Amino acid sequence: MRFLAVFVWLTLAGTGCVLAQERDTEAERQEVIRLLGQLPDIAPIRQDLRLLGFRGENLELAVDQAELLYRDPVIAGYVADQIIAAFEDPTAVRVSDGLMWPLIERGLGHLSTPDLKFYYTVERKIMETLTIRQCGMAVSNRMRPARFAELTSRVAARLNTDALQKYYGIQAKAARLGARRQPVRLSETATRRVEDRIQASMTRSIQATDRAGELMVAMMNLDRAGNTQACAIGRLFMNTVLQFEGRALRETLVYMSRP
Image (cartoon, rainbow, N blue to C red; front, side, top):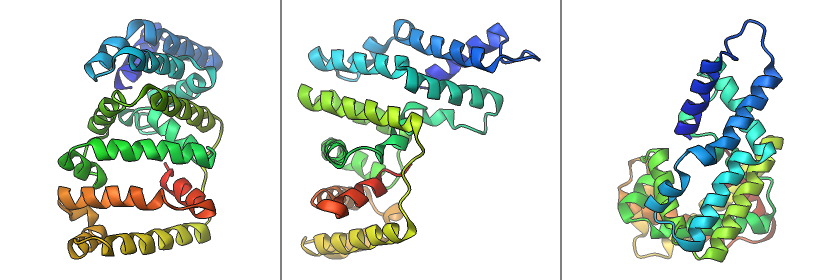
């Protein structure tokens, strides 16, 4: 997405459309949407995906997913608005964090519970596949977003084709919902209920292990925990919350999906 932002900014600056004194905002927006639609034909998407390990049907699915995200009118329209806003005020949008992933995150809370559960089941699989060091750094928020995205893409490349297709479909659905709606916000009461439930469930899960002492300390001080302990907490957390049912599961998954 950094390539995307730079490409569009340079093109806009080159045409002078964002620098004109009398601007046609809708024309600018349509021009950015047009440029986004051209990116799959210009950027080395297939080559980059091969370097991440995508092959065969999974490669074709990944290429199709990239093209959809750039060319879907709803998604492209939202991204165009963000790019124009970032060009006008670089502090308004964190382009360095990408534009697609935050959009997907905006829409996750609007998904059905089965879709959300499948999405986080794949996320659990990704966490289980990472090395202890990688997993621990991700859980304790010590890994750069770009690096984490690369690692998760490498894991996604090895998913079975049916699972990858469903995962991509859920991402696309979330992106469209995120482009149309504000993120779902739990009430303060619901948030407290979820946090209390997670703490109680995690405490029980930790106490059932033979590492209860060190893991309790790690859970209470996750930002200072070692990679081994942080990874154990992250994996235990995913296993614990995905066992919830009914409203408890729904509220927890929405809570986890907050941007």
